[in-house]
Image (cartoon, rainbow, N blue to C red; front, side):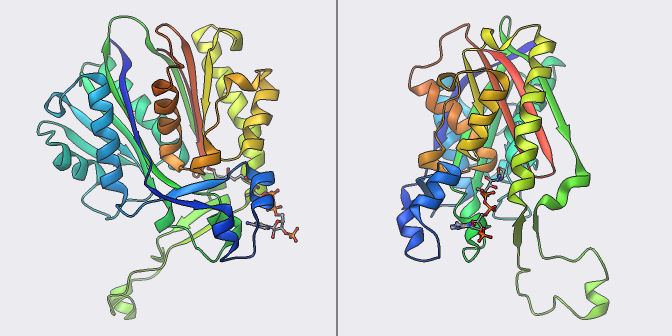
Length: 327
Ligand code: UT7
């Protein structure tokens, strides 16, 4: 049994923060941010990851014409849960009333939605599920260091969701995922918990204070990784589907940097009209980036039945993935 996307939804929080608003607080400028990244504004969440995820999910269910009770699984890709446990997926289950769903979060950073879709496809393909809700949701504003201008200007908050269901024709054709843990340090956010020692014996961590997180990125390294790896993994997914770039209507790529998108387009010889951008108004939404873009193009009427789409992402881990699907 193949799987396909029956409905999409997204949620972007109300609070809008422009580059000029950032420049009023730190040593940066609209000119620097726009010219280096293409980002003009981002939205920051007052409600948190689970609430944004639930709202995106409600919209996706409505688009699919499905009720929450019909969901077999809920998978949430996120690196910004409010709690270590319970999972965001369980919080979404409660918010939706999706009583029979099995729920868990998965962590693959900005590639997370691709990992979730591939997992949903496998569950449906093997008959373990019929309807899977896949969500990418992030409150990156809670994670970034607002004193580090080299990273905090890049990210935004939001959530996107897709209802994946069994289909008799079309749907997901191929998916290729990859990881390289040896390059994990180039984009890392520690929990603040040490990998060494026994806190109880050493008398640390007793004051009840939350461990500080710290996001560190080698921007140039990640840039090089993205422009090299994303075209490669897209070519691999297309080859497995036995089609070429000309057969693809739209390439929905992780929105990290407009220059990365241009470079990928050039490398694949794909015109930029086929590579939609929304990062100017969202910033980098990590795992929410691809599903929010998918929902935006869907609601804008840019997807016709039978269109071939490529979805691709890359991020911390390092992780990457591409998927070919028929709409
Ligand atoms: O989802 C995946 C996550 N990450 C990515 O995809 C990031 C990929 N990398 C990038 O997008 C780019 O590398 C960045 C946008 C992060 C940085 O652009 P860059 O052209 O590689 O700049 P840089 O890091 O080489 O910094 C150039 C200069 C530095 O100053 P000096 O040393 O030349 O004097 C930085 O200190 O720009 C400075 N700088 C800033 N200036 C104003 C760094 N951040 C800022 C800032 N405003 N916000």
